Image 1 (tube, rainbow, N blue to C red):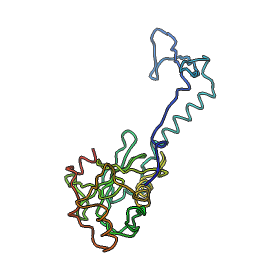
Image 2: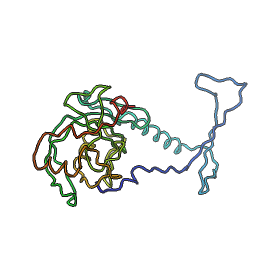
Image 3: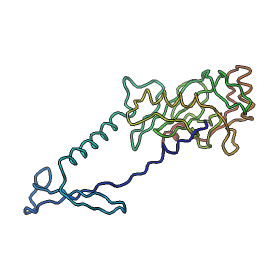
Image 4: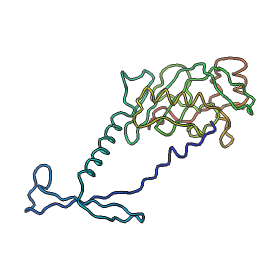
Length: 246
């Protein structure tokens, strides 16, 4: 997963406009909507961050401001919104802040891709059940034992893959993420799984293998033998599902 997504996760905001609202003194009488009469003054923001060019708020500026508010509202209403009924593998949907989803997948056979230097053939291999936690800009994955839907107290294990940080985050490298503020829940889950499985595994991080045996040997054996994933090789995170959700 040798890609750089720094530009996707670093947002710099520069002030460009300021508004100052004056209310007309009318014996402090207000209706249910606030002061009866107001005056709005608009300022441009100069290169030094100081307000300049004071002028009455124009009709065009009002229109543009209204469009920004409507766009923000549409984004809030569409991101992670489900097109139909909730997917059966969805475990949790957090809509606070930027939003995130937690879901699981059962043990399955998937083709994994490895860089040539690892000496592991890219092949369809059997993998353990997985726990996924994704936001717009980051993904964390873990492993689960068994094939049943996990409960809040189900133990969570380290995902036995390359390109993994110790806390479960996936190093996505330079993967070009196509998840935006309008991505629905079904597409969100599909995209993250595609990004994870269709990228090349290339390295361990800080020398950690996230498995009970040498991680290169583990996947060499899986590719050669086609056996069920050996769950005894999973290492506990010391956490349960409820801690991942929080």
